[in-house]
Each structure stands twice: as structure tokens, then as C-alpha cells.
Length: 369
Image (cartoon, rainbow, N blue to C red; front, side, top):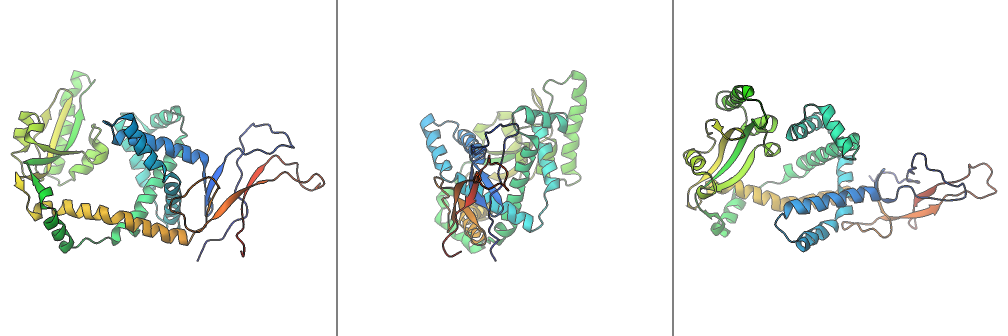
């Protein structure tokens, strides 16, 4: 069953703005309505700024023209992606999904990443950057809600069979001819800027973290997330794949003597104490199927995810009501109404209404509705 249509999109007014009674003004431009939620021009501007930052991060060695081309590609789907997120967040709320605990964890991970002493300091830093802290939290909450809906209602239904993995392996064997390689992750305890008197305690902290994995069976990645001082903490300490010639000879000697899942001792560096874990180890040459099956499964999962997600979002759209303002493009649009600007200043002889200073935005009605 489709959701109920609405009559009037809520209006936004800037506090303290003085407007003549005979004048109409748009304080915030609404570019799309998704059921009872809205997407504004300000939302698009924020998304556009984020896309520019993402493109620069993804393409660090690119020319300015290459970065701009990547930004242009991403910008084509900006409104579509904002509408998609709104649909997914609404679905999460309708399904009773809660992520409050995860929001707190994510905020604490950000606090640790930037080495801030407490959450009050994080809030002050966010506010100083020009972003409202509650908006910042809301963005994180929406990301987590979106991820959880996708995991539950899309990802859980993607099944990769062993036969599919085997076929992919047979068709792409050349992709799995590799030099001797290790995949590493880390836990790093920083001593940078710390007094000499703190060094023994910091070494002890690193040793205790290693013992928690070795003796208690704690998950290395989870410990890295919560206790590592490295920028890799948010990625569970993941460092990536390395050949022997890509590592310091002393480090290479240590890690290439380990098997999958094993860890180095605590390694002292100039700026702290590090523990490395071997996630996977590949001998030189063509890798056997059993060695690369998890990697192939992930590749196939990613290939299936985008069309599956788009199909799922199409079902959400079919059960929703989406309006787009003329001049804006939703690249995933199905049938939708347009948003029409209407001067809401009352007639002079309508004494029962207050003098108007609003510029309303109303949906155009389709014929036959």
C-alpha cells in the first residue's frame, strides 16, 4: 500500500528575518519530497562538497582535470543518492531498527582517531568547524541505519555458491598469479609526545592487547578499532598486502616467518609500539582456489550488490511518493509529481487570514488524482 500523499510541504523561515508583508520569499529551497521527508538545496550543497572531498581522496595522484571528471560522474547521481538514503532511513525506522549504541561507538572512534580527551571536546570541535553537533550525529545515525537495512534486506539475500566461485576462478586464473605476499593488520600504541616516564606503561598496554588475542581469544580487529592509535583503527587495523621488498627488511623477516592468524611480538618503533598480525599469506605463483576463495566470494558479492540494491530501492520507490522540483534530476526516477512554487500571499479582501510573508511550495496534482 502506498503512503498517503500530502498537501503542503513544511515551510522554513530564518530567525530574525524581517520581510515586508506584501513580499513573498523562499528561505530554504525544497528540491524533493520523499513521503513525509524533504531534500533541500542545502542538502545537495553538502553532498556536493562531500563528493569533492571523496574524489580528491580516491584520486590523490590524479590531475585536477581527472579529479573534476570523477566529481562530475559522482554529481550526476547526487539527488538520486539523497532520495535513496531517505527511503532506506525511513524503512529502517518503520522496521524498528535501533543504532543508538553504534552511534556512540562511532563517535568514540572518531574521538580516538583525532586524539581528543572526551566527547565534550569532540562536540566543541565539530561546532567550531561550522557544523551543528546534532546534525553531525544525525548523519552518522542515518549512515548506520542505511547500512543495517542494506545488510538485512539486501546483503543477506545474496548467496554466492561454491560453483559460482569455482567458475570465476577458472575464468580468471591469471589474476591469481602473485609474488610471495602477506596481508597485514596492526595495533599501534603511540608514544609520540609522551613523557619518558609513560613509556613502560605504554609498552605494557601493547603487550596486554597482544595477550588478549593470544590467551583470551579476543578479536584482533575489534581491539584495533577501540585501542589502536593508528589512522587504520577505523578499518580494524587493516594495512593491506605487501611483498617482501615493500617492507623494512627486519619487519619482512618477522612477518614472512608467520602463518595466517599469527602475530609478531611487540615491535618498538620511533613513535610507539606495534603489533602486526598476518591476515593471509600467499606463496609465490598461482594461488590455489582454497586460498583465494574468500577473496573471490567478496568480489562476486560486490558485483551482485549494486543491481540487487537498485532493485530493492525500486520496490521502495514503488511504495512511496517522490516529488522532484523542475530543474533537478533524479536519475532513478519512476513516476513522480513535480513540486510547484505557489505564491501564498493572501488576497487583500481575505480578512480572516493573516498578512502573508510566505512562499509556499505545494505539489502539483496529477490529472485523475
